[in-house]
Length: 85
Image (cartoon, rainbow, N blue to C red; front, side):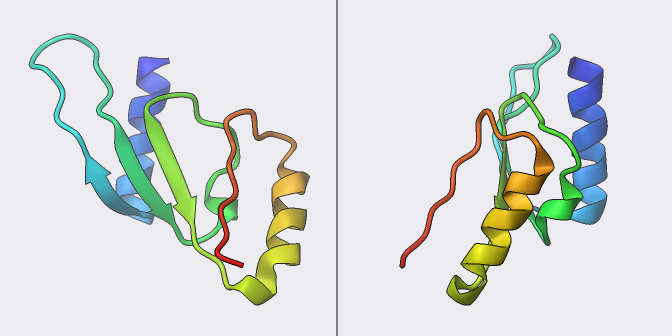
């Protein structure tokens, strides 16, 4: 699980925007809690279980499209949708 999360974070550093990353204790196999902004939901082809939060921004007019896209992923155990509508 640790190696998989490390690979995911490595890819996110190349392809997404890291909003925040906490520090971890020296030594050990810790994954730092990380907040990542994605360009789109398609950057997350599978569910990621770890101290990592992904954010995708969308316009209110696109809410129906975003919900359809979310439902098509087939995952979402730890998913949340927030809107100011």
